[in-house]
Amino acid sequence: MANRAAIAGVAVTPVAVPDPPLLNAAGCHEPFALRCIVEIEDGAGRVGLGEAYGDDATRQALEAAAPALRGADPWNLASIWAAVAGASGGTGGKTPAPDGAEGAALNAPGAVRSRAANAYAALEVACLDLQGRQADVPVAELLGGRHRPAVEFSAYLFYKFGRHAPRDPAAQGAPPPADPWGEALDPAGIVAQARRMAERHGFGTFKLKGGVFPPEEEAAAVEALRDAFPRAPLRLDPNAVWSVPTAVRIGAALRESGGLEYYEDPTAGMEGMAEARRASGLPCATNMCVTSFGDLPRAVALRPVDFILSDHHFWGGLRATVRLSAFCRDFGLGVSMHSNTHLGVSLAAMVHVAAAMPHLTAACDTHYPWQEGHDVIAEAWRFEEGRLRVPEGPGLGVTLDRRRLAAMHEAWQRCGIRRRNDRDEMRRHVPGWEYRNPRW
Ligand SMILES: [Mg+2]
Image (cartoon, rainbow, N blue to C red; front, side, top):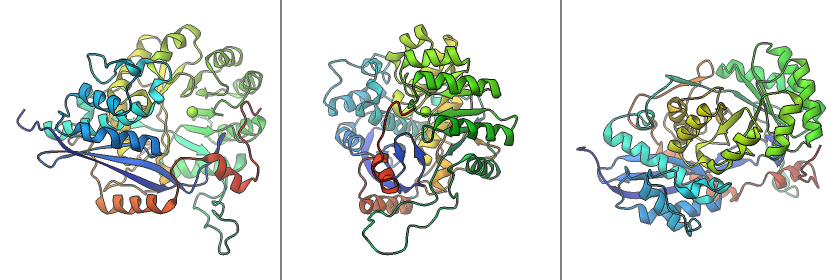
């Protein structure tokens, strides 16, 4: 290939993106969410982009791997994995599988949440973007081709405060401004938020992040959504802070009143989920009890869920996500996609991999609307009828806006947040608040 060229440099830039006070079982989102933007440049000046979590551990894993990538072939993903694993202090003595990216170390239960896997995922995305730019093909084609021209997303609804708490309660001055979404602390607030999401972005599927208020209140919010959107698929995700009896009781009531598209992690662990699924009669989903290839044999045996929620950031990249999709198809499982707060580079990766997944049975999650257009890419993504079209240009099909990248890096330098801490943020609103599991 005439344009094939080795990696000449790697840049890792931590950024902070404004984030509203969204609530979950672990507390409240801080005023800024952290991400890392990865740029891998070849000798011809072409740049591949990746995006990772922005906590110190992931950033340090990326920075540690960067020197070993210089001179490497961006098409040889096995060598990229070896560089990451080597820089992260090894992977328990295991070496990558011969087919490269989805190395053996990624197959240990829980291993994919390791910082090596998180860092590798961002570097793999950047290498695939660079491959696409060198070969003039979209990333979806590098992953095996498009199974769909556009990808459907769901509206991700959150209980939320109307404004952030003051960072320093002793300081005098105006309180932080209210955000345009307003407060959503009851069923009416959630329905209003859903209407705004539907009007602005055209979403037709709604997911409520639960685990915040007593389960009956959250079930009432789901009922209110069903009244407002009678034909829309609905999901509820309490992030595993309900006991098995609570999950069964609420799930059975929701099934009775009209069902859910899926009941996401109402309780913890595969055994608990299997019981909640069996006794409630609801389809169940997880991004918590099945999070790595090593978890799959037990998931097939115990059947805790009907849907596995993929996420290339912790399943080990885009190629691993395609492999997960095929596995789910072959073993009779549904598959959808999980999201954390992210920017447009990760969204591009999500769109390309979702297009290339041979089996994708529900709308994908995204936090993107909550960032209100704050992004590092030149042209922010716009949903049409809740969908994003798969870019047809080379690579991921997005370009970095260096002015925005610099501004968001400056925000990272100023914000003082280095590790996500929803609990302490919640305590600024509710003094003494504690995480408990099970809470109900
Ligand atoms: Mg979840």
